[in-house]
Length: 502
Ligand code: GLN
Image (cartoon, rainbow, N blue to C red; front, side, top):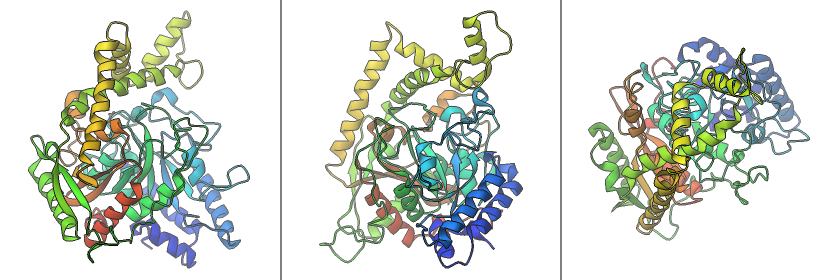
């Protein structure tokens, strides 16, 4: 059976109708993971444990206690700590590390138990490759090798959640978790032809998510459709007292508007009354013509569904790159100080004293991009530079967030590209960090502002997918998913699959 071509919603129906069991689904995907090793999408699998979970899911169903997602397999980005699978964040620093507990996201989506009554009952297929500590835009920073793009193996899958995206695009998992600090859910989703959502900051607990930049990090799903993302996000998001920035009222059904009309008082078209803002700065120099064309066609499609298009401005868009690349490394330098050779992971073999032990362990354990960010972060936080860089960046961050609020005075959601171009070839940007950072121009500002945003397939160029980005105001995830779902009802970009997967 070609279960790997099905959406999560379709698999859920098949499980409910007893057309397939969780055990059958799990073995189907495990076999595909084994055969699909060339994509390098997975860092760790544990077939025995996967099959054990699938058997429990089948028992739950037989007992009549199944929920919507019971028995559906998924892959977790290796940034979430898991019991039973190694947790490395794709770093040599954590080579072989086994966590004694599950991250909140893993718990929420995993098997229900006495200690985890809210578990959705999904079956973990393994841990997805990523950029080391989620730092990167191409997955070339993984200590365990890059992820290949299923649409063209000569191209990057995007980053940092490249393994999650490639796993779904190559049919190795029906859906996967990711994290987005500056675009890492939306960008790999766009480059691999998938749908992904980064929720508002605080929607999903960061407990057990290996920290990169805590004020920006958010978890979310990468799947085939907006409907699947709504299902997963509804299960992932909840209030968690173990994360001090977890929102109090996050337990929503994010799929509740999927089939609703935007404005019940308006005309018959589903999106009548919706105002879509196109920021001029998102369609200016640096954007490839083919991407601009597909994204504009996407906007026209929303117009055909009843929406009105308006021009808006986000004047500080360009500054989001320097601001992000000051703040994220600053937070990273602090978060990564815990990897000192004492408490977790790698410790050097030979050392004369404590300070040499720290130095050698960190030198050996971290890759070059991680070191670059720790150096930048330590520099911008140091006495004498703090005011000039860190504090200044914090001020501009506020202005960027305020600009979004001005724009939302004129529109209900903002539409633009996710990336300046389609997936690039391996090595094309990896020797020039600045070129790599510039590729994040359209995604960074939403993390700086804490807003929800998603990536939706809207076209192809030379066989490579193009994504459009929908940005909403705080807590408007259900509305964003509604618009994306309506778009997907009217288009088939999200249904296309790479030729090798079919
Ligand atoms: N590409 C960005 C970076 O390198 C964003 C990464 C992310 O969202 N985790 O930091």
